[in-house]
Length: 240
Image 1 (cartoon, one colour):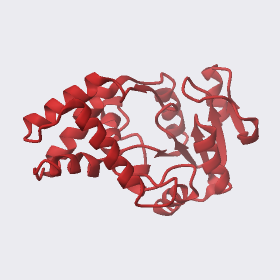
Image 2 (cartoon, rainbow, N blue to C red):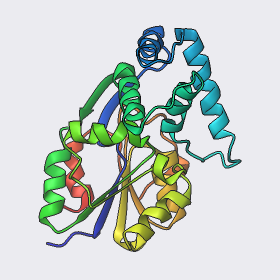
Image 3 (cartoon, rainbow, N blue to C red):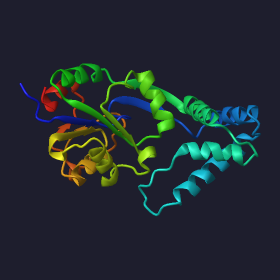
Image 4 (cartoon, rainbow, N blue to C red):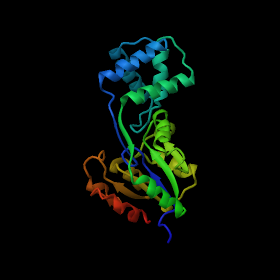
């Protein structure tokens, strides 16, 4: 038995994992302000939130492309610099991780991931990750989720500086790993990001409707779809 595709591209959040975050709660900003203060950059909680949002907006304004993705490490670094502190790389990474841990409410890998990935590997498939995500958050989370070594290649939007559904990020992955779109299947839970990005480069897509997918859009129909929550059908849809 041979697979219908040589390469399987996966989205991460909402597709392989169930995640919930909250960056609005005051507790997050109070704790992060304390963290900055302990590292020589005193902020009040409200002051820190305003500065963070201002710096994010300034980074976003650097490009006219609405799909431009900022690098949040620059923001966490700039928050120190505005208080006269020059942090080293480790301090910036630790600050980003602190912020993420205190904004994270839920993170788990879906149970179908391990057997499906094992089945695809046994059939000789190559697996890739293509995600709208911040590397400073996602790379540590891949380790926690047991997915750090699961992929033959990874492209994250904060590294590419562009988000799905832009074809630019899809082409970056295709070019980086010498992939033919005709031999690839994009698997994701967001029609407007994952399915649209695949369509932009004439690639087939498998749409998985999960808790965070939003309202189904019939105008963005994928070649394969799983919308009833019956993930026992997923291996067959992938060609296993």
